Image 1: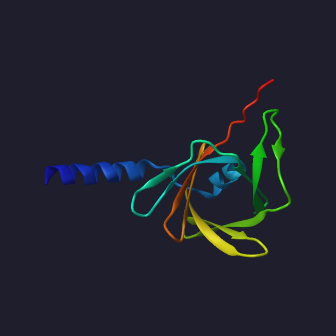
Image 2: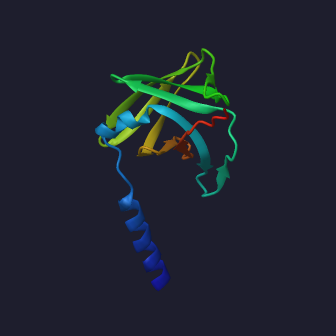
Image 3: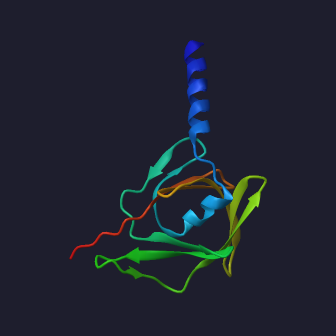
Amino acid sequence: MKQLFYSLIFSIVLISCQEKVSPDSISKITGYWEIQKVQLPDGQEKEYKINETIDYIEWKNNTGFRKKVKPQFDGKYLTNDELETIEIKDSSGIFLIHYKTDFAQWSEEILTLTDSILVLKNKQDLEYHYKRFKPISIQ
């Protein structure tokens, strides 16, 4: 019983220490993001150790897009014309990214957004954990 109590207290403290997403922090979403892991609803995790593509998100003046890019060793990125338009809305303190392509529409909740961490959650309760991408340069 004591262990359960201490686990509960630890969980509450851990959750309360997470930085809340705010309207001011939304601008931090602009940049290159590399997926680290996906956490499944049952708690299992799928880790991504090597990524050929990363996400580039651009958010300016309440409009933006996300697209996949391939980093190159010279610091440049290969890309194509495919992109997802995004809109970020505040719904009573919960920030949602609404994506739209010619073929689909969906939303993800922003759980965490800092200078170096981005965590998104979709309607299937999958959590996508990203870190800010740092380019590799061999010159």
